[in-house]
Length: 337
Image (cartoon, rainbow, N blue to C red; front, side, top):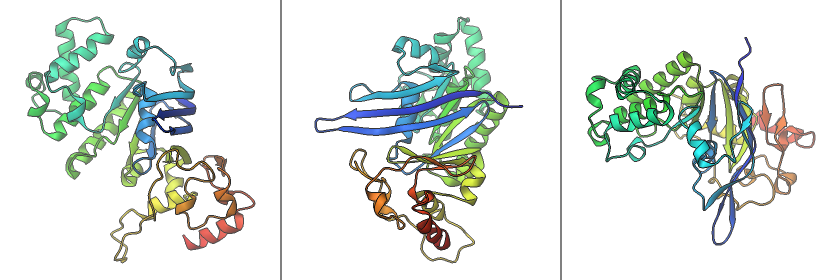
């Protein structure tokens, strides 16, 4: 049975204004996600992943930030230009987010119970008793012990893993159709990370929630996601099903990311690393944004910004290597990779 599309992003552009310049943090980004699907958004720090997620939630600080173009279609309705009062009705109920660091996202002055029941009361007209039961049930669902006693605790009284589970419970308590998980396991130990990932996957399957999973960890992508988009310097540079991405990455940057993953079977003494760093948004105004770091660049790469080319029915890539002009360089890249 074909799953229905829940969210579609068309030509999204988010800029930040400074005294000296306008910085395009998200530059003409397109993607979609279907019911029950887990879509990975991958890239190094500074590639625009988190700004993209905040744009979807209507949480870009204005000023200095602003969505200057594009659409965010939730069931076909563009939510980009909704007023804050209208967005509050959507946030939590239809689209929710798990933030990177729960200690800075939870209010230290209020108990866990107060913060979670407030989220319920904003969207549902139910009694305090019903709201409390709903909160306890969700805290139990995310695997927290003594859930009823936790309602009286403050965030600082919980461990990092428990706070992250509380954040997941808050995001899911109203059973949103779209869940954005922005590096949800970054600050956690390996054992807790595994539990949190399993929890998100289980809830995704049980509630049929569409998940945007933002991460820089390709191991997590392989485990969690069905499709992946790779971002670099504010642009989507590759899109593919997860299997195809790992078996046949098309963009030199994607290949570099995969090569950078440690492999216990390898006898190499040093890990592979991509030379250079992600450019500051807005600093490259001509040519491919990865050209300075790419071993396979040719003249056109420094003169024109490539389009997102469709190289198969399921795979797209923003790279001139996949044009007729770049095919001879691509052949060489395939041999060397």
